[in-house]
Structures are given as C-alpha cells and as structure tokens.
Length: 327
Ligand code: GDP
Image (cartoon, rainbow, N blue to C red):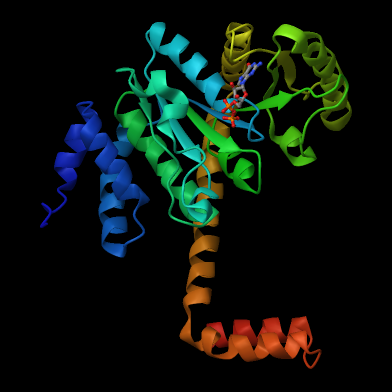
C-alpha cells in the first residue's frame, strides 16, 4: 500500500494541536532508524523543540515485579484526575530480544491507556540500548510539545537502561521491594547512586511492617553511600491500595522545586544535552565500526588468533582500529 509522504510541517501542527494519531506517528518516525526518516525526524524535532521542555520528567525503575506498572497506573490516574496530562514512555531494550516488550503491553495499564489525558507508549524495539534511549529522549520532546506536563519514563531494573533513563529525567524514582524484613530485593549499588527518591513498594497488608523496616534500613544505607546531605528520601507506598502515593508524588515535586530554585534543574538539563551528544557520537561510531567492511573482513581471523593465543587482545584491538581508521 502506497503511503502518503511524510510532511514535517503537518506532523508538527498535528502534534501541537494535540492530535493523538499524529503524536503516535511522530513517535514512530523518531523511532525509525532509516536514514531518510532520521533526517525528517530531526527536522520535526527542530520545529517542536521551542515548544518542549515544560514537563516534569520522572524516571521510574525497579526490578520486574516491583510493581512499576501498577504504580504508574495508580499515580497516572490520580494525576490526570488532578488535571495533569500524563505521558508514559518506556526504555526496555530487552523487548527486541524477547520479541514482545515487557513494558509494551498496554493492558498492564488498562485504565491509563484509555484515559483521554494520558498517552501510554510502549518501549521502542529498535534494538540497541543507544537506539532505544535516543528514541525515548526524542519522544519526550514530542509529548511535551503535545502539551503533556508530566512524563513518566519507565525502565526495567536490569542492564544499563537505568543510567540512560536517569540521564533524561529531572527525578529518578526507585521502586524497591522488601523481602523478609531486612533484605531488599535485587537492588544494585549503581541504582542506589542514581536514585533521587526511593519508595519501598507493596507496603500493604502483611507486608507493611517489612516495608517500613526495609525503608529505615535503606535510609541508613543511603546515608553511608551518599552522605547525609545527599541521601535521597526513602518512603513506603502501595501501588495497589494507593497508600502513600501522595507522599511519593509530593516528594518528587519537592525534589524538583529544590532543583529549580537552586538553578540545578537548568544545569542538569543542559548537561544531559551534552551527555546525549556524546552518547550519540559513541553509538554512531560503534555502529559504523561494526558495519565497516574493512573491519568485518579481518575480524573473524583476528578473533580466532586471539582465541588460540596467537595474538594479544591489545594488538588485535589496534589492528581493528587501524583498519577502521584507514577505511
Ligand atoms: P512490574 O513488573 O514492576 O511492572 O510489576 P507489576 O505492576 O506488573 O506487578 C507485579 C505483581 O505485583 C502483580 O501481581 C501485581 O498485582 C503485584 N503488585 C503490584 N503492586 C503491588 C502493591 O502495591 N502491593 C501488592 N501487594 N502487590 C502489588
């Protein structure tokens, strides 16, 4: 079926007018890795950038099962009820590996998915974390231009995706789980270093006391790790009952107000642009290196020599880089 060529001005107008269909198409455009689409996407972003930047960007992480989608559904619905327009994006690079996105299933947020004031978009499945993160960053620009004033970016607590998401939001919220009293489930030190706010989730019914205990212990651990002044607040909540969600959201808002009044928010966002620039340079360099004919033609033999102990890794790396440079 022949498709109408993409008209950037029309897309920009549709997004600004709040057309959900156009917004969805515009996101598909920024997710595309085809060179022609990349070019159109950049034109579209240039048109829309002056209208972006207005949202409160919040990253939400937690291991699978931590209750992220239940939490986002409950928080998102409360926020739209209070007059906000909420966009939910996701960074889940594993989704392309498994074929079906863990964060892609809209039925996980059934209520929010049909809320007129919410826009739920599954994780792009373009492959590498770099590609997925880029598409999500650019999607933030689009949803902001479309008038969404809260952007929630969900990510799974595995791999490097948390760093990517922490680098595109104003506040990074960790949903933790208490297990048996004093143990916290599957939290990596790296994530504790990134978190701006921590909430021990599922603090309901028989788990409530465990969650409170875990929160106290985590508060202590955070102080040791980051120093008393820089330690994030550790709260408890339940996405299921809604208990404590208001306090979590107030804390996220306070965190942003503090960033704003100290000038840190603007600084953070500018630095994120610089980091983003370099991460795109890295990704593209790596992609061209792996795509280089000169590299591909020598790589299998070099790999074999390294495996068989005929060549050191250092020399092999030098040869690969030289072949790339000279190509
Ligand atoms: P995700 O993988 O982090 O998105 O987690 P889900 O939101 O899909 O939740 C995983 C499981 O935990 C589901 O069976 C939920 O019903 C349950 N769950 C989620 N939030 C809560 C909560 O606040 N309290 C309790 N008790 N269960 C919850």
